[in-house]
Length: 140
Image (cartoon, rainbow, N blue to C red):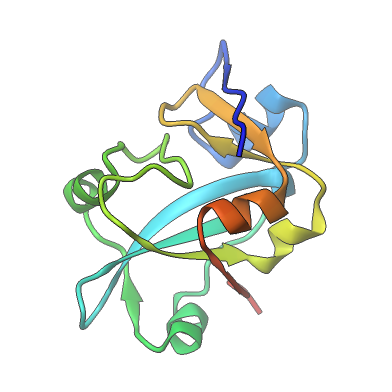
């Protein structure tokens, strides 16, 4: 997968900021959200449309384990990145990865590239393959 990183003048830390900076809809922004398996303690990465909020109970039922939000230190340790700039791939550890099926409705989406002001465009199909992700519904 070829990636062209765009360094932005303004922050793209939130989905709204990223959408405005990229000239696209919030729905086409990829939020890379790290969760933790409640029992296993394993890191779980959800690639979520910027327009959606994760229903943790639903996701837990779909993947077979309750999920919880870990602290920022855990996120940095397993990804190698700070919250607000986490890319969908290239992490310090292998993460079980799931992609919001709503992202797959778009020809192109924008994801963080490791800092709060860098992003890259990618087709959702390429992202799904590159991340070895499983499709999932994250909301009702």
